[in-house]
Amino acid sequence: MTDEIDTPPAPGPAATPRHLAPGEVGLVTPRDFVHPEPFRFSSGQTLPGFTLRYETYGTLGVTRDNAVLICHALSGDHHCAGHHTPEDRKPGWWNNLIGPGKAVDTNRFFVVCANVLGGCQGSTGPTSLDPATGRPYGVAFPFVTIHDMVHAQKLLLNHLGVASLHAVIGGSMGGMQALQFSISYPAFTRRVLAMATTSREGAQAIAFNEVGRQAIMQDRDWNNGDYPKGGGPRTGLAIARMMAHITYVSDASMDRKFGRRKKDGANGNGYTFGTQFEVEGYLRHQGQAFINRFDANSYLYITRALDHFDLAQAYGSLEAAFAAVQAETLVVGFTSDWLFPPEQNRTIAHALLRAGKRASYAELTTDLGHDSFLLESEELYNLVRGFLDRSDPPVFDFSI
Image 1: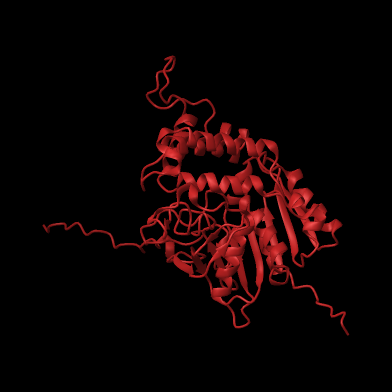
Image 2: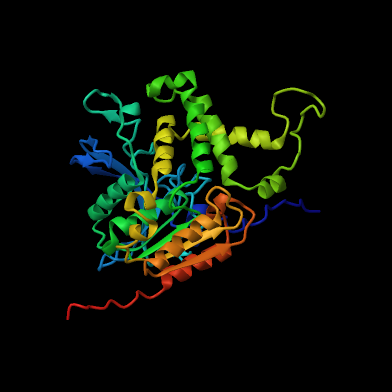
């Protein structure tokens, strides 16, 4: 009789780390662009210089014209694809769209994304130190507009050696930046893809922003914008985020995800003010996660920039705003977006066409709300890929 020896099974192939999976841009490292010269804001105020934190994916071609600029929304940042460490469980916010073989194909394009001026993720903003005082700017920081954000990004692109943009892409506030880019730098910008955006906010959107600002400013820890790093109006900022997040989704998506389900352990019939419904816990989680990565003063500044973005007022009419545009433009609206509804997106495309520009409009049916442009959608991916793959239109020289 022989002893039976338990032999462990041969190990199978190890799972591929997420950052090494096909279609991933892999590990990325943010970089800082330091502009050492004075920067003049639309308000007339100036800074002695500024920093933009940014990431790039792919390679700039020999002719330096294969760049795609990604513009982020209010709560976004420069990290739109890839992973910062092998242990990263959460990739960049538009990782589903950007990468080798994806809709924004980094095998073909040099993709750039920067945290906006006025932001709080490494770019110069209210949390930055004022060299004149050695203290954070706080609300002494210059008023920021979408135009200022775009101007700073153009200086970054100049620094990177980009000769022209194959495309500029953005959703929500990113769409505003994309439109402004085509207006401010028409010969530099060949394509614009603006999603879930508007040429100017309506009264309701401004009202939501104001409630968020008041939640911050009425928090006693705001202290007129003077608070220590890691401190400040955390409660007010969390409430602002909770309320804003509701505008990013739809009633149908919230009902499907949470309904009226109670949290485990909640007293079914108890009249308390603790968290009882799953949707309440979800919103509180959103608020708490946000305050760990965002600055309250930046929230005030960026929402004000959104409120003041009004192309028709700035240029006399929407058609006049687009008069110099040379880019081909695709505007994408989403049926369930009630923050910047489809009609506001269609208005942009119609004005471009009336101005004699090359423009088209696509409307995607979804019940996911304003944030639909961030979520996985093969229909959206095909739209983006097809738009970026179009041949450049012929250039006619009428000077001969």
